[in-house]
Length: 309
Image (cartoon, rainbow, N blue to C red; front, side, top):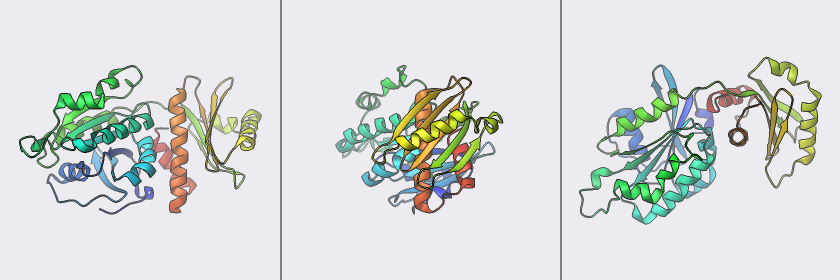
């Protein structure tokens, strides 16, 4: 598998597969998309498969599990995902603490409505005497998966499956569950508009209305003042988030790496969800800029499809 840039994404929702290297992520993709267990090579960066379910196209994104990729690209793709598949090798007891740490990092990054499926992989090795495989109870306790039923996390649909990517056992069931949740999670967005402003170029590079009301709203003096104030407030060494309560709507501005992301929302929008969305959008802007693919047209559909706006 070779690395494919974010620009290779197609219009459609994204489901992201994550887990440490050698957990069996690529084998899982091959088993599900082709029905066979093929010999795989280590994924360098990421690989994207396009799958069609119920007439809808999805990006199935397989992220490399090596530490350099966990530190660089995992957060961006986790934030823009409509669903997450986390794969864990049940025989890899040596690195279980590392897997637990990264699993909860991923949970922290997710949009609030993203469903999660935990795939405890390689159950076909449980009968091998040379392999010490973790039991389901041991996995639940070690990863503290019961926490996902608590109020802090219960906005995420969650399910654990014991699978074998090699033999295909329970693979179909796990994939049907996650894609079923993603397909059924559509809601009317509370976002009225997104505007991205380049501080360096001193101009707006994208205005994306989701409501006709924004066409009048954009000339509101208070919005102009908010942008001007945040340009002066901007500090290159840190990211900032500001919230402004207006009469008919609310405004959030996230600043990062020379850009401002302004999001206009309904009054009942959830702060943390908007914070993650705005941070995610600017992370995507940064990646597209590095790849030389930062155009208003492409950025528009990435925002529409990836952030549910």
